[in-house]
Image (cartoon, rainbow, N blue to C red):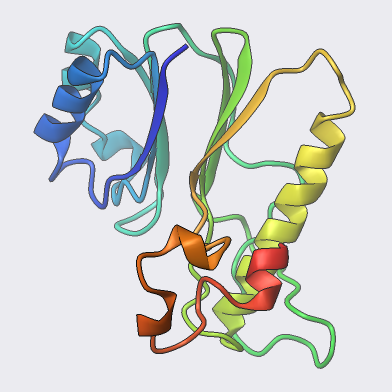
Length: 192
């Protein structure tokens, strides 16, 4: 199975490029993040004309995820168990970020080609100590719990693909010293 993932930064603005990438790389499955449209605005007809199925999850002009597959898709899920939503305001003192809102359109799971395949768009955190940073850490924590529980089935085939908004090591960035802050590579983000 040939898979790809792409933070497309507006599916409608990049539709022609998406179709070209599918063809050029002979992809079976493509995970998209930051589609920036509501589900009903996704240009599904053009993707279907290229021989693929589409499942999209978008709520507004921000965020949003989609999966494009030519292997069929079933078992569609619009969030993973425990996925937090973003609650504006300060996190509880000493407790990190706890949310009580509905999840944003940042996770989409399907079964395709026998694989439990997820397109994930991890919150960027905005800045260390920003409430969105704690939301990001909570999102990664809940995702780790979900992944660990999913891994208990030794026969399961799972792919978690997407935009993680984390620079895991200094070697993963062309010049880590050029960043003005440690956003994307704080100790907490890297550990998560």
